[in-house]
Length: 499
Image (tube, rainbow, N blue to C red; front, top):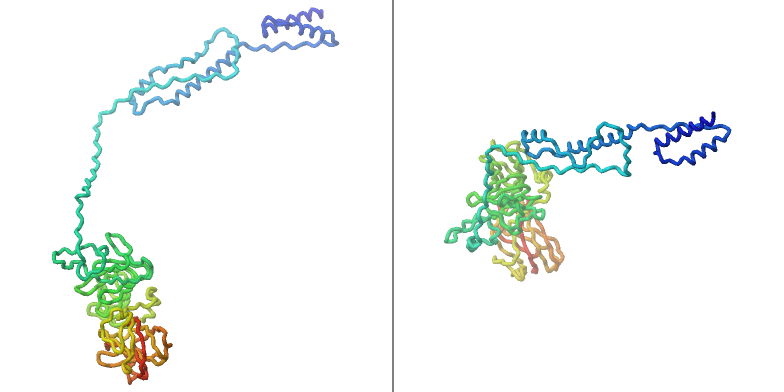
């Protein structure tokens, strides 16, 4: 009975192996192992092998084909379908037309009898290449009227260099010394050489507080004023810091701001556009500020305000229409005249205006003895120095054009004496009066520079009457206080005006 059972098991095992592995299977080893195990005490029964359903390989192949088809469909959807500008009619026709299938794409298998399981390759199959998209015909342009582009402006033809004519060279107008590049731009036009240039208003001796601090308006731009250039009627300047301008009439203007120069008849006039200015003049000088005009005769500080101008008088007077502001007074000039009048001093103005920290100086007389042609007593000019003192009574003296004093002047002189004595500096007036000042025992044989206010000169033999406003001087002398012969030298001499 046991043998029949073992035979039945072997036949069942052989049939299962033939179904899984094919008919040609060597069962020798398996039979021998089974026989050996049968001799054991307890026989083990092998479990039946698990049969694989025949439909599973087909399902796997179908799944691979479905995934590949989905990938091809997605790729086709991302490819551009319509050309730019394609019309709606063309687009619909293209959508209706069937799309070509790739040549190497395999169709999905139809349902039928079971097929043998295909052998799986070592690597994944490459996706089938898609055909290049064929260019579609361009759509027909709509019937529209094209607007032509505007014509570009044609460049103006350049004249040949041979046709450019240069201005003929013309000589300097009479009395002019500035180089042609410093002229305002207009040349004498009359055949007789009559000067039609604007007249100079400011001499070239301009002293700015900063390097390149003075700028001039030329062709709508501000340019640095060249050194040594005069300013003419119509010029407009502005400064950084401050600058001293000497007008051709001798007036001094210290500017902290912007101004223009003009002439009213033969007299200079100024237009204050911004900031403030100090004016020191002997002849009347008009200063305009919008529709306001202040005429300075003396020393004054003027500052521009909104529709008004502050005026401070230090010496002389300032007039505005029928109103007059005297020295030591300050007021605001408006269209109705002077208002808010009060007392003022130069120290007050120095605290208010930084550009007045150093007192402005106007030279009223200067003699360097380089080309002196006036009258000399007791000496001569040699090598640019006045030397002498042979006249025991009058010592060494020289004459100059009469100069009217205002009382605020200061005398400066560079001198040298041969002996240690009391040296007398003396002025002679147009009325033959003598006013003197004594310098005590200067060191002999050495150059000295003396600075003496004009009011420290007193009348000879009086000692109480002072030299000052209302008098005119015309001579300067150096001599010994005891009337002895004194050899002396004078290198330069000047009278300046200060606030």
